[in-house]
Image (cartoon, rainbow, N blue to C red; front, side, top):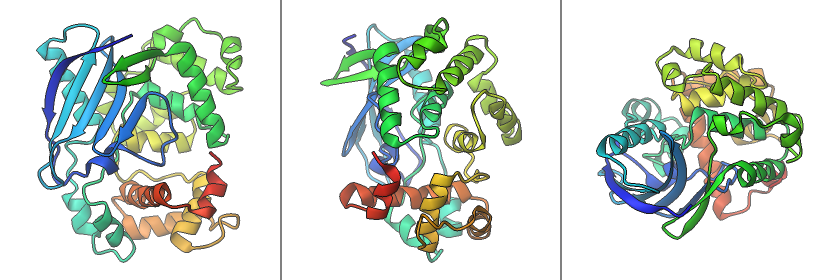
Length: 323
């Protein structure tokens, strides 16, 4: 589909706001539904039945932030649609996040303080829906980053829609209903392995209305955790990411999977990743040093590491990523 510019909207985040470190996460494995260059982010989105192309540009400063949002579609979009889209992006991208209490509490921390100084205004963000995040989480399970990239590309090429806008050609996610009749056998043909069953079952839960993302947003973290853990093939590590990224719980850090255990051991204790610090010791450190903001604090360290990797090799990390 070729899309045309249908609306331009100004979005005003809370200050401070650091555009590139928020809208581009070098630790995210690449998927063919987005593109980035300094000061500009392109991505696709399914919203209220429409396939959209979005162009987000940095038009402000860290202390006086302003984003220019270009909305590309196949038809004219009314004001109510655009206003709803802007509100959804404000939620997903944490544009209304107050970082003041986090900084007041931890910007003098001996390890975290210098990281905050380098990335002042950075915040987590989640560009996709809950369903889309779950599909990506499934693709990340128990495999190398290279294989996750391959699986997501195969899924996009089979079930996504290629959108052309503003000089970009990016795939757009499918709606759950569009996968309702797809069998496990067909998915296995795309070399997703055992994950085919998880994709089919989770897609079915959304099609049947068993999962309602807007309703979940209004529930407590414990209620959200119970619902998410009830999904087939979704374990504690994936739920932790969902609670932090999709549902914006800044202290969420209850599980450390083995891959992250290795990275945290090197990052926080400078030990050989292949001889990692016990999870209990890592958790005790995070609980003691960053209580109330454990997830957000670790996000700052994590992004600092991967931005460094973007500009220079980090040998020990390359062995773990295997992209």
